[in-house]
Length: 324
Image 1 (cartoon, rainbow, N blue to C red):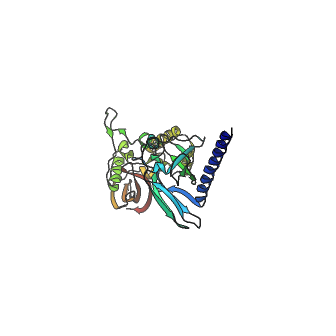
Image 2 (image 1 turned 45 degrees about the vertical axis):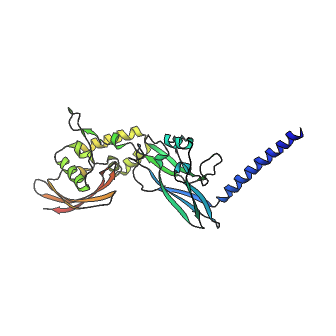
């Protein structure tokens, strides 16, 4: 009886000891903060992690007077978690690779990092390496960082929350792949050509009324959102309704009901200047429009960006240069 009572006392002391150690470890990170922001704010789509990444810039900061030490695993699945919730508070599933990494017996390699007061440590991760994002929707994204690595009694530091909007895949919504002819099974596919060639082909397609080719390098979503009213509505509807809005917008363009400048047919044109970085660029074009009694000259500036391995026109502006 006395032995059983003694064992009970030892067990209770052990549990309190464990709780005390855990509480002390938590206090060591009370002055640490974790924040996230988008590394390259752009349009996000569903799909694979490599072809359509969502890169987030993660920063760990020491806000206290003492040196902050934490572990960072080479395999980031043992250092952090991304959580994403819908407006109905439904949580996205983790990727099978993340689950497999954590359930497979293996050695976890890590570095110990020390930060003095006010110092920060930052790195970039792809959200899609952690979460399965297969549907267009609006999510709320947050991060949990594990300074002592992911394990049974882990300590977690929670980040700020970001709004993550996933738009319908352009392959499904904006005619990235469309038949060349109704009777043909051949598909048009965008090529990895330079921004000036993208603009040139788009203008020529419009001159010849080849609508399939005209829309091939056009980011219809961004074009639609040039209209504030349409943009507000587009942001508030479901993924299926967005697809219908894009199809209606394309139909209105083809029938010259909206955006007259972008669908105007020039008699001739000359590319004036092209400048671009690895992801963004502009192409300036002089275009001449012939009317019965005069010709009009305009300067078009097409804005392009790299998406899915090719350049897309996503915006433009026009300056009238007078008549000739």
